[in-house]
Image (cartoon, rainbow, N blue to C red; front, side, top):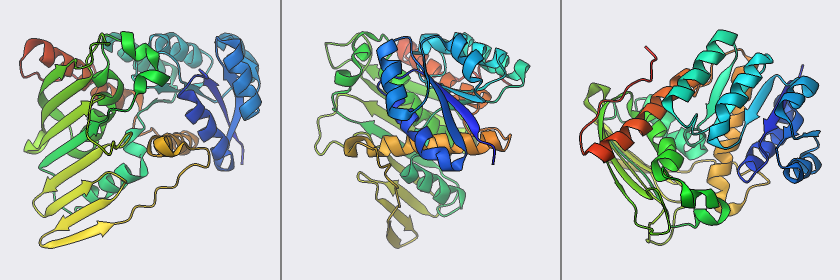
Length: 346
């Protein structure tokens, strides 16, 4: 079996999860051939930890390592130039979310991949968390019938600013950082969005951007969902970093609770389902749900890339989730119900 040559650009805080995931996927055909960061110390440490050559220049890395697939885990403003650089070197790309700083940049990345015939995915990993995947599988199996109402919550007071201090000065925070993941899951479960209404709050005076968002959406077929996100929750126990879900349909209800348990109601019958959630050996117990989602997302990308098949979160598909972020901010600013664009994609 010929290995898929993987390079990772960006060796910061969250990139460690990507790097560890690719190391774990060696048996599935992944070969980590390069790590790259403009900070030479970060690149050198990643090289030492994960056993791949270190680079500080992405262009030099592409020319020397000749990767098949490049995982871009950098600040959002660098995504477009790095992705376009990869496509020019005949490499496929995985771009960390959010896809790009503006809708125009996101469309440009997707169109550049299309012109180059390059494989492209966006690292939306919440939908790949094993517990979320089980909820999706139950719904797609018709267990509760066509879903008609859903609530998805990411509510935490965990100090995310300690590990990612850039959040303190972000003018767009809660929706752009975690809300996009939850919106993507809502779209995956309930289908395309016909319109939405959003309210945002800045409850922490240290911030420039919003730390809380409540979004009401109508979906194709008449279903309704509520997406509720905050970094300022005060209830204990804190479920960080879990997304809690309740989905109702004509036959029953499926609920993903804190701790990963699933309650399935069908008619008058209630079942408690145990979900196997393999924890990576390198996981921090506090972040295991998120880290398992990262590993399973990378596994999905590797499998689809090797099969020359599109990822679930292919670039063109992810424009729809990014479009929900844009109209959520537009609705919050205007106080109006907004119909989401599909960012130039038919």
